[in-house]
Length: 272
Image 1 (cartoon, rainbow, N blue to C red):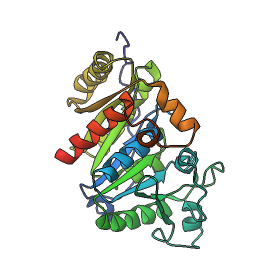
Image 2: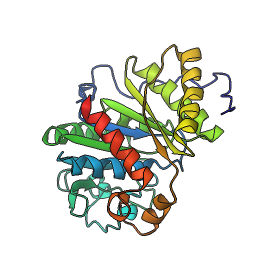
Image 3: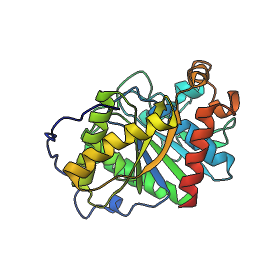
């Protein structure tokens, strides 16, 4: 992998929460799945990871935190009566907006897909939602937050509810550059944060390792730390088939390489 990340010119952003915020007392059972760039398979990975954890007997909640382009419900073929839009307008609580996805055995809090109406939610309201989510997390073994792409304040604020952040990247230069930008901003806001890397859609395990090495070198050179690699998910045409059929890959093609790779990541996370 010959991709070179650009010189470190990412602007340092101000922390989105006050130092004393209660959301800082994050539980280790909350995982935020992030990416600097859209289109790297972050939502598919979040769904598959939630499914893998549920199959291992863990009570799991998947929270669609992509406030601008929510699509967890679309990938699962769900038509929820209640979603985050209902929560923001005060019609229901976060708990009431939660529904059970029977086919996968995990709970889902859906975003409002196709509207983008939550993208400009006030940060104060988002902070309250994050605090409510932290309270809900105590009833689960694992909570997965599917974050929106980018480094906007809304994305970073939801990420602060998580004890572990999984940054999903691919070998595309823009994906690597944007993943680095997310890692940098998060590391500067939250020194010592548990940030780990997932390489998705790798042509092979070796190619995935090279992609990770490129990102790791940039982090070592500019940030003086190395986010560990939690796993590599190989490129697999059956991923696209599963998404097109709105069926989790662990149901449609459980023996697919990509499915087994995510299961290996789930096992690794549970072993920590």
